[in-house]
Image 1 (cartoon, rainbow, N blue to C red):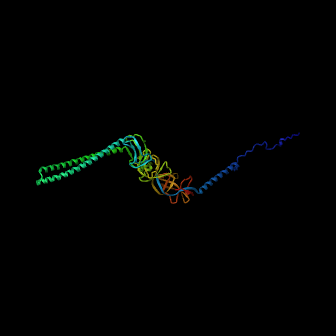
Image 2: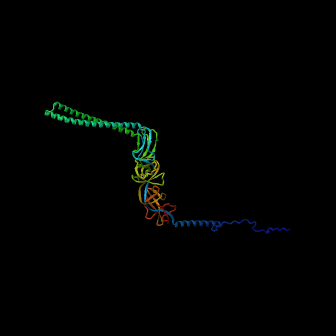
Length: 419
């Protein structure tokens, strides 16, 4: 086998040569960038160009905005939270003690004035009433007897007067003695005195009749206090006792309210209370009927406010009272304090620099954005602000201003707020 060996003099000339290092360029000499540096610079330039293009396109492209326009007949309202109550409310009971033997009403009943609600056992006073009635009958009989006695005495007096007159005439003519004339004259005077006595007896009988009637009336009144009656047309709120109970004098048996005086006692923030007046229309929303609004009106504004909560108490009368209304139920009241003929309603988030009922809003006018300093009326119950001055005709107020808006920027209105 033959092995070939390269001679040293035939080795590649660069095999043992040291690596070549580029020398720095001389001062003032241009050195071309490397491919990596060029690539990075190219990317940076592209990014800058893209950013400039986006900014330019955004500046030139119309911004889309949603605006609010003027509405008419806007109700200004004040909100209050309260409870259902009644101006006329009573706890009724007996003036005497006894046992309940009859109950003719229950909670939820509508009763008329004077209607019987309950009765106590009154057999003893009823017996006294019967005795008093018998006394009246006896006194009436005595009066009748006295009147008859007077008639009899009057007839006797008339007869004796005639006899006495004839005897006196006969005595003057000599046909009768003077003694007979004197006797008939004395009989006449006796008859007159008897008539006077009978008249006095009639007076006594009449007095006795009056006393008997008074005693009977007292007995009847005593019996009547054992009967409990409704003091007015009322709604029975509660029945507090059952049959067989023994109420003490003054203990409540029923709780009543006058249904015509049912109202909502509402609490209104003092900052809004200055707009309240008697007779203003209102709407009432019961907690049990959240989807219904009952008509009402402001019936009374309390002089004394709630100093702790800084609220004013307002009574709102319910005009159309529901049949199943419940006292002490929570309710909301919306009191109409005025009506704006026309205004633009905007949320507070659409306003900047809000102070003293003034603020700045963005508007869309003839396809371009603008800013206007406007004046507001009192805030509505939903928090929206009514613009009452400062808007040119045809301007729409931007409801949700976005960052980066500029005065004079083109704008496209995509929709308007619903009334």
